[in-house]
Image (cartoon, rainbow, N blue to C red; front, side, top):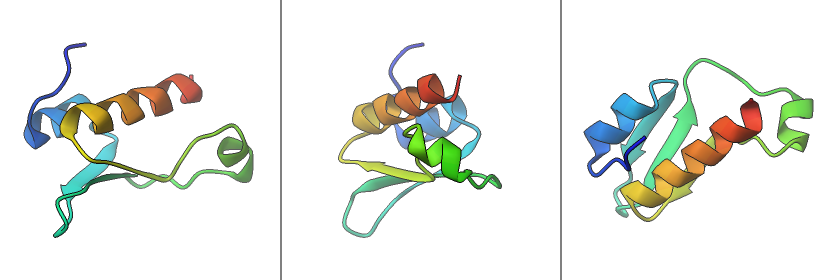
Length: 69
């Protein structure tokens, strides 16, 4: 997968996440309609992740996908 460059690319690449930029210009993503179990959280999955840039958030989301599989 190529690295997303803009927020719209990021949303298209990770449709299971709601992605937005805060008023402080930080990027956030939270899972759409799915709450993690305690076991999933213990394995390192996160309900919400954040990052400073689109490529950094893309990496965090790829990391979450790897942990999920």
